[in-house]
Length: 98
Image (cartoon, rainbow, N blue to C red):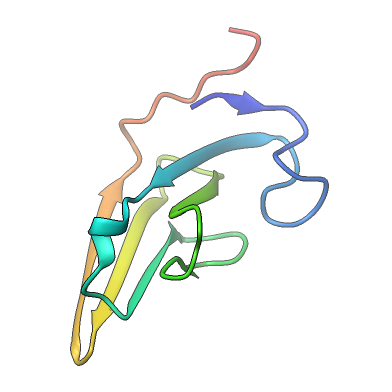
């Protein structure tokens, strides 16, 4: 991940200087699910966002503290629910100046 000066948008959770994580899913990843939510926990913005109807099948998240945040994915299929978490500590945050 690299530092992006000015963010990815002029306003909202993807604005401002920082590091961003992009997660790409394929349609096969959720064919049997009624809900797939992804986000960083703790979040300083939108929290978990629904991806099931996202035409791009991806999520872009602003990392504010890779030592204390983790990627969280939650899914539902009828009455069955599950979740996975991924530690961000192994990510190398690089400045554009490096």
